[in-house]
Image (cartoon, rainbow, N blue to C red; front, side, top):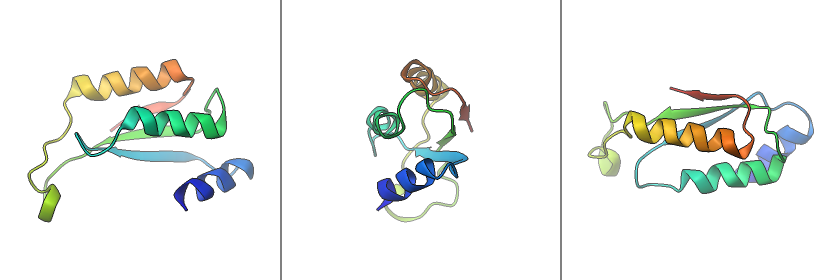
Length: 91
C-alpha cells in the first residue's frame, strides 16, 4: 500500500518529501533507496529526509536499539547521492 501511495503522489506531482527513519539492523536502507529510485527514475528530485532513530522515550522491542552513528548516516546520504537523489537531508 505504501508503494502505491508513493507512486500515486509522484505521478500527480504532489510528492514533496520522503521521510525514512534509519534504525540500525531493522531495514536495508540501501534497498529502500534503490526501490524508490527504481519507481521514480533518476534523478530523484523530491527531498529525501534520512531521519536518525533516537530511542528517547521508546518502549517495547525497540527500547534498547541504539541510534545509527554519524558515519553510517553520512554513508547512506553519499550512497543516495550516487544513486541520483538530488536533495538528501540528514536529521
